[in-house]
Structure formats: C-alpha cells, structure tokens
Length: 288
Image 1 (tube, one colour):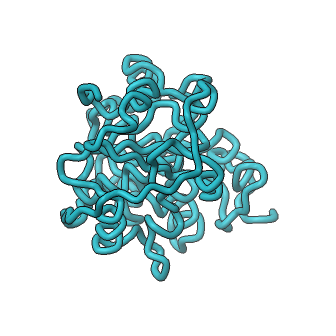
Image 2 (cartoon, rainbow, N blue to C red):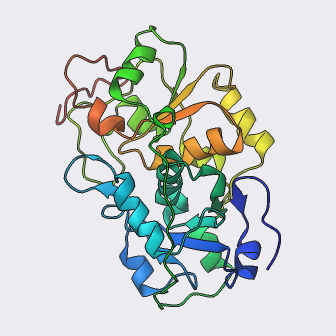
Image 3 (cartoon, rainbow, N blue to C red):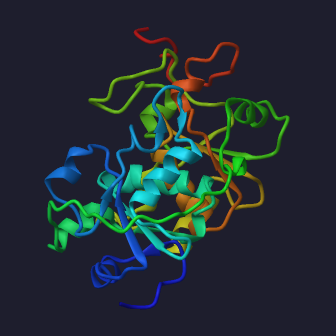
C-alpha cells in the first residue's frame, strides 16, 4: 500500500502495488466489454459502457440512481480512490471518468496512464475472476452540467454568440469531411465536415506510442499551437463523445482548463437541421 499520487493519473507500477489496497477501487471500461470477461486487472469491476454508463431508453448518460447502484455494488466509498482503465488508449475509460466527474466524483477518479495497452505490454497480472466486494452506501451528487455541452452551446460558439474554443479531436480526414467515420466504423451522420470555427487536434497527438499521455508542457504546447490556451472556455467533440472525453481529460484534468465534453458530438451535429457545417473537400452529403 502506498500514498495516493496527486494529480489525475496513476502509473501501472502504482496500480500494481495497490491491488490489495481496500481504499482503491479499480474499474475497466473497454470498447468491447468481452475483453474484460477474458481477463482483467485483478480486482477490477467491469463497467459496460453501453449498459452501465448510459440510459438504455433515452440517449443520455446513466441516471444518478443507476450509477449509484453500480458503485455501491462495487464497494466504492467517499474516501475511495477510483482507478479507471480500458482498451483503445483509454477512450471509453476517459469517458467513464467524465461521467463520474459529472456526478461529483472527479477528485476521487484517476486514469491509469497507458491503460490496458501498457498493462499488457508490461506483462502485469491479469485474471478472469469477478470480484465480490462488500457493498457500500455511497450517495452521488446531482449532475454538474458545467462539464457537459449541448447542441445549443456548440452553436452559440460556432455562431460567435459565446466566446470559446471548439476542439474537434477526430482524424484530419473526418475533420475535413473526406470521410464520415474511421475505417471499419459504421457512420451515423448524414453530413460530413466539422463545426465552423473548430480547430483540429486529433486525440493521438497528445499521447506517446505506449498509450501514456505526453508531458504537461508538451500537451499545453500542442493545444496552444492551435489557439487553445485556457483563456476561453473549451468544448471538445468527436463522433459519439468517447474520443473527445480523452481530450477533455487532458484539457480539464491535466491542464486545468475550463472544458465541457459534447457527448452528442458529430452523430447529433451532423444530423441536425439548420446548423452550419464546414466541409473542406466537397463531400457534404452521405454518398455524394
């Protein structure tokens, strides 16, 4: 057992040394939930992103009551340190961290730097045992809507009615409108391009080859080079809000800027009627 590190990240070494720490609760949030079933960090509880972290009727994040029940079953207390990790460079793990932050747990949440990719590369322990911790009675706060952007908020910045920076973290081809979605991913929008005024800072530019985040100074410089320096509120977006959560985490939790994640992202914006779209390639409509 060791001292809880300051800041929003924990290393693989620290996590490995605290697998038996009763004050630490570990969660896996992976793109494919079956990855957890095959093997996971010992003691980790699975958070199935499309079941546990969302409202399965409305397109929304999970209700306070639903998330509260999941965290109680996992034994999370108000003094627990919550470590979240996942596959695909922590995309959905960061989204899980964002959801927990919306419900007031941000100070307790740490992202495992490098996620599952680094953990596996290091040959650190994995098993398939599903833990059964002693349940807790934790109570969550109401939603902090200051961490979440809606379509009207994005439009207000795009149309110059509100000061702010829009950060599109998708690939350059998605941003320009050359493609509608990453290769092999089903597209859900009918328009291609980006929100007018948004700058393109692909999520991968802020991570190292092993999946860990670059240094604070490097991350700050990468965004500053695109005009995002923390002097204005920031809204991040991607396709469905998961990759943009990774950038939200960097901008909000690592750099300390005022940032909201737009989880409607391009699947909402690219299908909305009456909104401006900037397309740099001429491929505006799906199939055209």
